[in-house]
Length: 436
Ligand SMILES: *[C@@H]1O[C@H](CO)[C@@H](O)[C@H](O)[C@H]1NC(C)=O
Image (cartoon, rainbow, N blue to C red):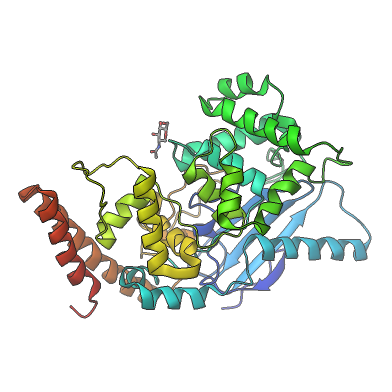
């Protein structure tokens, strides 16, 4: 099926198995992308046509993306478009190199999936349904502040908070209508992520509290102030340029994992988990596996891991020791790119992804194009696998589900921890043998 290039877009050949926008942009890595359903009269005519447009605002442009099973379409919109074709071409080249960098397209995800699949039977079962999930290489300042917002929080609310932060503390770069909008549709302003200097004044705390940031308000202002005080000693010449403090954060990419972690832990509101998320998702520390209660659950549910610390409760509090144990166990299983594999497992366990990659009823193309902050990510969101492939994936998943249910049932029969661990191990053996 031939898909024509949408007007104004450029095409980059890229299989969805290398990058699934529907998964990667909505699984709790970045909180700033807007998702617009594309009005399309009849997807049955062309089931591979892009169904969503994704947009993000950078300091000087808005990047727009669409995707089919084998192509990524991209374009950037600027406040003052150039009429010089040469300058235009340069800007397009910049956008493309931003895309390559942000999505780390030099990393071959198919290769990683096949390695993890050999190393880990749990991953092997998930890989067809959750294809194209890779780690983003985000701006470190944005990533740091977003993950300070993430403590005791969920994706929907973090997304709202990060959006409020941008609306409140940075001027819009441009206003645009939604894609394929009717004439007269209201324009939406696009705000970039604010720089440290915009968040460092003491009164920022009170403003953030009124915006619903709670105790995180102070952490954000204090962190921005520390960065600005220590590193913004020389002036920045333009609002489009990164401030020295932002550039300094980027230099943490060259440090070792433990040096970079020590630097991040100095900031307000940054504990081990926030530091690890920032290192994995913006500082190139691909082996780092951030651990939270969610990852702990995955570890016990699918990997038969349990804490060696003496704890009777199933809901253990996360101690530094347990964190270390879980994190290094996952590194032991997945190797050099452990943090990336963790992202796939983490996404597969999100409620919003419960029907992702499975065969579902057709989407509602009549849905109005609007900013969606509470997505349920379904098969319709992804231009991925063929129905046959989806069905195969679905049957594999059912196997896993059945066995997890069995685990739960047995736990209630015999409550002792040792017994539970033993049973889980036995069940895991059954669960990991695809031939049974
Ligand atoms: C996210 O957190 C907010 C505030 O704590 C809560 O009202 C909301 O129900 C939560 N949403 C989900 C999907 O858990």
